[in-house]
Structures are given as structure tokens and as C-alpha cells.
Image 1 (cartoon, helix red, strand yellow):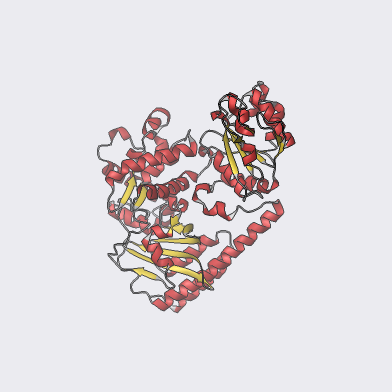
Image 2 (cartoon, helix red, strand yellow):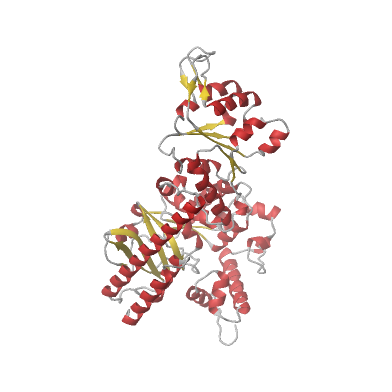
Length: 523
């Protein structure tokens, strides 16, 4: 039952929340205070996708997921309604959060589920989903009261999103930044996932240089996503409607580089049996992305320099000069300054390319981004392999966070791809759950390079060599971690839950299941 006083408090909470920086988190906090539940998620609708804005009660990686509405029957039903949708106990429709409720790491599916569509003037802004492990907990709620909650939440979300846009535009005007194009935001293949300070700085630099039409040199280790950065730059530039042409400088035979870049006419050399248009011509009006530029031989660097300096090219075997208008974006995993110092790269070409250098941070420096990326890849793999749900166990998440990722984002994607395939055989109730044993390659790396304490939160220590039963070992670790958190919090459940990154109610339930009882003293 939702009383008038509860609705009044809800309205007051919403009014105070929209002007604050953590407005989305406060909005779901207000909803949760009004409607009791174990998990609540606020999702924004972007085309045919739902993107999480804030959540409580689920695993952290949910914030990195992008849900295609037509692939999730419950989301489809919620988005097709104008009033709150309560799914009956025993509903057979797969739940997008099955196995993701924090504190229930044994794959127990959600028992009660409700979704509230958020509309303003007929336009759907997003949805709020509420989940509970208690069957039928939402059945007795008054429909009229839920409609009021949905209407007030939608108006608050609309205001919060408007304020967020205004703040962003103001910031951009002050710093001469531009927003990423809508296509870059909506296309899964070009989304830069990450909320770390290193990624925020990178995104700010991209927004600053994207509209400036300057040459950009992208530097970074192998696997950090340099091509994705280049694609984002192009899609956010004034040339977004023109093509971005990709050239892998390391893959072109030395004797064919000029032909590849500038084109050739029939008969220009042995094997030239027809005219060929070069990459510069194809990129006219758009962007030319020169990947692995550090691999380009010195002999070819002079020709490239002239083309960039004068914006003119000459096809092999052709007398006529052709003028082109291209923006150059180059990328390398080499230290080009060092290459210049050692006479392996032309200094004049380096300065032409690095008008605005951008360093892409390695994954080990992107604090907090590993689980977001894991969630992003997990959702992609779920669709790719036709699975109902792909989740990470808390222990697997710990392993991912502790690993140093020398191969960066590319290595993370490959590790999760293998892990998903290995975990498919252990799918339970439609949930494919990735455990540490499925993270092939990481176990040997930890045993040879890392200390076991890095895998598990200190000072709790688990000797993996002594593990005989994974389930018992997992429960033993959870029991000790909870007992330690309670001791440190002086038996304060809320404080212990915060230290463990859990919801208080879920922590109490998990402790009860593990046989931990607290009176005046922990027993």
C-alpha cells in the first residue's frame, strides 16, 4: 500500500534531487523508498535500446550493458505499455536481470518484477524496473498510486535530463567542445565505454579536437582501441557525412605503398592491369585514417609528407596532379619521438601528423572501467551466441579487476569470449554464469606474476591450491568477508553493506543463508 504521506515524501525527494549532481541516483533512491524492492534500475531510451542511468541492488557490470528492446520480452512489454506492468509470479518470460541481483550469486532468478514506463507529453523517455526476491510483493500495490509515481518520476527524469543537457552545453561553450554525434552514441560498435577519470579526459580531448579539422596522432599500446578513437573523432567532426577510409600501413608491401595511397593507371607497372583509385581520392571530403603509421618505410614517408603538406597527389603512371581535401588521423603503438631521435621516422612528417596528439590510456590505468566493459561485452556475447543471459560471478569480477591486462581492451574481449563459450555447458535456468575457472589465461598469469591477495580483497586470503569444492570455497570466502566487514563496522549492517558494495537488505539475506547471526555479538 502506498499512502498519501508516502507520495508526498516522494514528491519532495524528487524536487530536491533534480538540481544535484547525482540526480539520477537520488531519483531511484526516492522510488525505492516509496516502493520496497531488492533492486531498481533507471534506464534511458535511446532509439531501440535502453541504457542504464543509475541502479541499486544489481551487480556493477549492469551499467555497462546496452539492452536491445526487441531482444528482451519483458522490456518489449513495458515499452509497449502506458501504465506500470506487473509480471505475475511464475512468469516464463526471461528476465534481463536474472542472476544479477547483488548478494544472490548462486544464479537464483528474480521472483517478482515490475516495470514503469516514463512518458512526458506522449514521448517515452525511459523506464524504471523494480525487482524483488519476494514473490508477489508488487501485486497488492494500488494501480492509481503507481500511475502517480510513474508520472512524477517521468517529470523529474525529464527535468534532470534537461538540466544535464544544459550543463553539458554550457561546459562545451566555455571549453569550445562539441557533443559526440547521435550516431556515435547509438551505434554499439563505436561507443566508448568507460567512466574513469582517464576516459573522461580522453573524451574531453576528443570533443575539443573533433570539429577543429586538425591532424591528430593517436598513441597507445596495442589493444587500447585506437581505431575506435579514430572512428569517434570522425563521427563527431564536420566530415561525419563523408567517408572515413582506413589504411593499415603495416600490411602494405613496400613496393605498393604509393599505389595504395595515391592510385595508379593501367600499365603503370607489372601487374597493373586496370586503373585503381587511391585511398586519398576515396577519402576526399572525409577522413583518412593511417593506422600503424610507425611501420611506414622511410622511403614512403616523403611522398606521404608532400601529399599532406600540399593536399595534392599524383597517381602512379599519371602526369596530372589531383587536389584532395582530407583530414589525416594517424595511430601508432610506437614512441614516434624516439623513432625520430633514432632516425627511423622523419621529423617533418611527425610534426605534420602530431598537430594534436592524443594518448589512449591502457586498461590498467582506467580505474573502475573493467566491469563496465565486461558488462558491455557480456551483452554483445549474449546476442552473438544466442544466449538468454550472461553474468559474471563476484569471484570472476574480482579476477577481472585484479588482472593487469597487458593486452588491454582487446584481451578483455577475447578472454570473455572464450569464457562465455566455456560457461555455456554449465548454463542453469537460462543463465550462463562465468566463473574464475572459465577465465582461461588469467589463472596462469596470477600464479606466475600476481600474488593471490590481488585476486581477493585483502586481508581475506584464499589459497586456490587447496580448493576442492568451488561452491563451498565461495561460501567460505563470503562468510569470512561478511564477518570481517561486520567486525570493522561494529555490527552496523548498513555500514558493512556499504564497505562490501552491497545493498543492506541483500547483505542480511546472504548472511542468513550463510548461517551468520548477529545479536549483541556476532556468532
